Amino acid sequence: MMSILLLLVGIISQSGAILDANYYEKTCPQAENIINQAVRKAAANDPKVPARILRMFFHDCFIRGCDASVLLDSTANNKAEKDGPPNLSLAAFYVIDAAKKNLEESCPRTVSCADVLAIAARDVVVLSGGPKWNVAKGRKDGRISTANDTVNLPAPSFNTTQLIQSFSQRGLSAKDLVALSGGHTLGFSHCSSFESRLRNFSSAHDSDPTLDPQFAAALKSRCPKPNSDRNAGQFLDSTSSVFDNDYYRRIVAGKGVFGSDQSLMADYRTRWIVEAFARDRGLFFWEFAASMVRLGNVGVVEDGEVRTNCRVVN
Ligand code: HEM
Ligand SMILES: *[C@@H]1O[C@H](CO)[C@@H](O)[C@H](O)[C@H]1NC(C)=O
Ligand SMILES: *[C@@H]1O[C@H](CO)[C@@H](O)[C@H](O)[C@H]1NC(C)=O
Ligand SMILES: *[C@@H]1O[C@H](CO)[C@@H](O)[C@H](O)[C@H]1NC(C)=O
Ligand SMILES: *[C@@H]1O[C@H](CO)[C@@H](O)[C@H](O)[C@H]1NC(C)=O
Image (cartoon, rainbow, N blue to C red; front, side, top):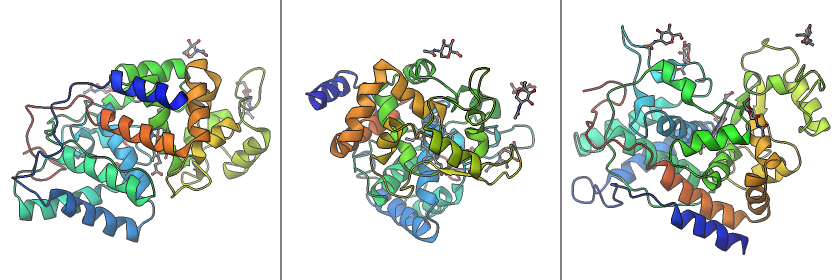
């Protein structure tokens, strides 16, 4: 019953996309293989790569749409998105560069950087044991990247009302919010992103009362002194390199790392979806794939360019 409801929500809110799964069929049929090879090679050398690429795609799509604005480097008179404040885990740009370099050799000026990132994000999920979906393609690359735009990203301190608003501004539903938050089944967070939950949380509570007390103590020991070790932090899930539904079981148990994760359990609009995903890995996989397709449709640029170097506009 729950599954049928979720499926219906997904179908009804499907947006009319200009993208096409066969977009490069004639112009660059080997595009996805080339990208997949670069992603596999990088992930084999560095287990952090999948989480980083997945986050990079989210960050790209939430700012100016999925237009590869996150890939542009700062210039002498412009500070780019990637140098904006919440960039702690934005890394692994070299993986996109490597894929793009090989693409330019095989099919010059054809495959946009925005499509490279969308395909790479799907590939890292599959590599980590998650679901597979067809990536619709045909995005173009934007020409603007501004550090200040990062204020529009949802913050880890957001509650569900704020998260739903942030997602709905991009045409994404509460179901998309819960499913895509499952991206936190991969990766790591620095202390600065959750430290405010651990000490002096509010006048009534020293630490966030929605945190499981034992988990709060464990987080405190990982971040003993505020702002002391910039590299310290916590894995987002107990199986941080495996794409699974453990993230939701942890939230049900009060072990979400971010206030934003935990708030999904505190709001009636999202709690039932968290519980359904915690119970049913297959349902989560299906809905995550559907929501990634919808994330990949956000603010798609039709009149941009195909960059030859993902770090600079043509
Ligand atoms: C719902 C709103 C979201 C908030 C508030 C949020 C916030 C954050 C924060 C604060 C970090 C840690 C940064 C750090 O300290 O290093 C993080 C990491 C991460 N996020 Fe999210 N995020 C959200 C949604 C998403 C979505 C939709 C995805 C992808 C589908 C995603 C994927 C990731 C991944 C994979 C990491 C780990 C990165 C790494 O280990 O390198 N997040 N997120
Ligand atoms: C993050 O931003 C800081 C300060 O703006 C900058 O020095 C740093 O290079 C950025 N990190 C990445 C990975 O882009
Ligand atoms: C970005 O924000 C800073 C601080 O709020 C401000 O000084 C600067 O003028 C802004 N830059 C742009 C391009 O809006
Ligand atoms: C969510 O946060 C906003 C802004 O801080 C606040 O106004 C609102 O009351 C909060 N909602 C809930 C349900 O806590
Ligand atoms: C908690 O906040 C109060 C008031 O802002 C401050 O005086 C106190 O030093 C803080 N305690 C800790 C442990 O940070």
